[in-house]
Image (cartoon, rainbow, N blue to C red):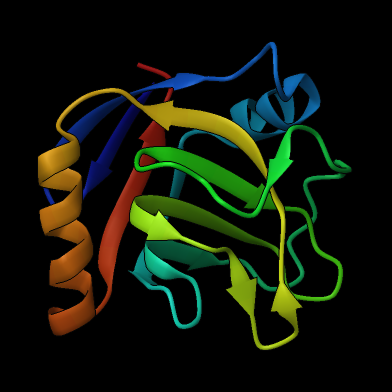
Length: 134
């Protein structure tokens, strides 16, 4: 999978073994376009708020502590549907408290550039993001 954030390209893998239903649902949604903003409560991460969007999945390989490069899908519940991308230390949370999201993909290239993009989103605001199956 390829992810482009604000003109920067990243290679990622889908975690089909760990989260097969989430990977299938997300793959059907690709190409997936959106905007990322810096997280509010979680630490060093960027997120895509998705409101009431429903991927029709439940919890699989859910975590509250993703490692840099890990991508989580929170499938709606006590907070809105969202995608979180960790670029550093993260404890996934919302105004409703700690959340756990499905670890469905992992960025495997240019984690130093991902960190730069994450910090840039904190100081400069939202960035465009596109996920493709390339």
